[in-house]
Length: 362
Image 1 (cartoon, rainbow, N blue to C red):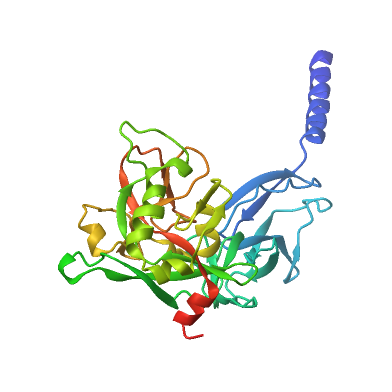
Image 2 (image 1 turned 135 degrees about the horizontal axis):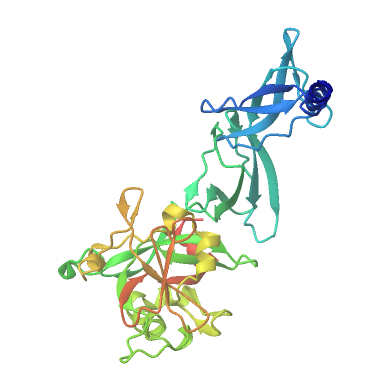
């Protein structure tokens, strides 16, 4: 009998100790307030709740966890608040704020930062640059609207596009077959005015259209020489230069030194860097003339619902590069080392400012 009493005594002591070691547990409901996501966790009475893992929501940032008390809400403090009863914490969101970096692209390294809030109206700034027309802000290939309801990414990079007269102000210099009707003679070549030299003495021009379809090098077998020694450069500065321009027109074309390829040329290809710096996306795409298309030049690349034709770019080493789709920026394809394969040609040149101004009636 004494043994039984002793066992009962120790059982009672064990139960009392067990009760002390097993505190009361409460249920905390976590309502993420997003896509119906609700989770529950068990927390011991008087203990702090571990901060739940972050979840992401499009165009929104976290505004913390909130609890309702006495008919009002307060933000839960995970460092100090303890759980003393079953409760529900509700996650709150606030509109995301985007940092928009603006590169002036004006020959300086100036980059400005502005901030837009998702869901709110925004207005892009309109910068000024003496002697240039502002063509808009571009995010790679995409032109940013001047204003509207902001729903962009958290951090984006935009680049200003400029041109001396505006891209739609063009000049006609020289002639070349373009309509694929040789009987009516060559057609005037239309040129975009991309940039002005620092001393204001000349303009950088590029043909508006892809006007020829040629290999980068005609060597067979292909020899991967630098741009300076490629047959396309020879064609530009000899055949094209002599036949496309009259004597008076050639007098206005400057021979310039191309530092990246160590060459002195009248007619040349734009480099990838020059395209990105001077051409807005919709003007960087390759639009082929009827003559070029008749050479068997086809492409499946599309931009804005229109076909975009690849064209060669100048490159400093032995690679031969061509641009497709939009010329530069998001979605650009850069092809290289394609042997004797033909691609489009968009000639470029520096022309006396007085000559260009006279054509424009300035």
